[in-house]
Amino acid sequence: MTDSLTIGGAAELVGISVRTLHHWDAIGLVVPSGRTSAGYRVYSAADIARIHRVLVYRELGIALSDIAQVLDDPTADPQEHLRRQRTELSTQIDRLQAMLKAVDRMLDAGGKGIELTPEQQSEIFGATWRTEWVDEAEERWSGTPQWDQYAVRAAERTVADWQDLTAGVEAFNADLAAAFREDVAAGSPAANALAERHRETIAQHFDCTHAMQVCMVRSFTPEYYDHLEPGLTAWLQSIVDANASANGIDPETARWD
Image 1 (cartoon, one colour):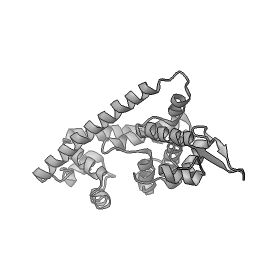
Image 2 (cartoon, helix red, strand yellow; image 1 turned 180 degrees about the vertical axis):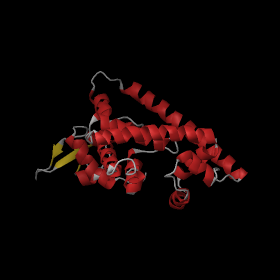
Image 3 (tube, helix red, strand yellow; image 1 turned 135 degrees about the vertical axis):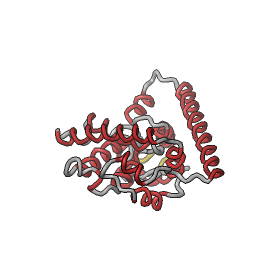
Image 4 (cartoon, helix red, strand yellow; image 1 turned 135 degrees about the horizontal axis):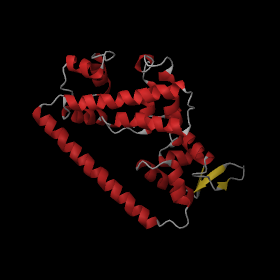
C-alpha cells in the first residue's frame, strides 16, 4: 500500500462506500490527514488503521458517536477495548454455532419454518394480516441466512409466543402512529428511538442491521402502516433512513448485508 490514498482508493481498500467516508469525514470520525500537491485530501496509513478500528466497533453494534469517544479518549486503554471486542466476538460465535446446530436439527427433522395454519395466523395477527405474505417472504428470502434464522425461531414458537410478539408490535405501532401525529422530526432522539424499536421488532425474527432495516422498510407498500395513519409508511422510512445515517449507513447505497 502507498503512503497515502485518495478517498476512492481508501474506500476500495477497506470495502466501504465513498459516501460513507464522506459522512465520517463530515462528523469528524475519520478525517483524512494529508493533501496532494493538487489539494486533494488523502488518507495516511494511520487514517486507514483508524477506519479499520471504526469498522470493527461498528460491527459490534457500537454507535458512531460512542466509537469517536473511544478512539479520541487519551485515557482509554486500547488493550481493554480489544479484550472487550474479543469477548463480544466470542459471544457472537457461540450464538452462531448454536443457531447452526438448530438448523441442522430442523433439516434432520424435515422442519418447515412456520407451523401455524392460515386460520391461526389470522387469529393472532389480526384482520389486516394476509396469509400470502408468508409465501411472498419465503419466495423472496428463502435460502438466505436471515430466512434460516427466521425459520428456526418460528418453528420453536408456540401460538402464545406469537400472540406475545404481536402484542408487542401493536404497542409499538400505537406509539409510532402517535409520534407521527405529533410531527416528531426524523433524526430527532425520539424518532431515532422509534427507529431502533422498529429494528428490534425485526430482530426478534432474525438479526437485522441498520442497512437491512433500510432495505426492508423501502420495500414496504403503503398498506403496511397507512391503515393506522395515512402517510405513516413514508414517515417510517424517513426516520429509519435518518437513524441509519446516524449509525454510519448511507441510506441511498444501503445493501442487504
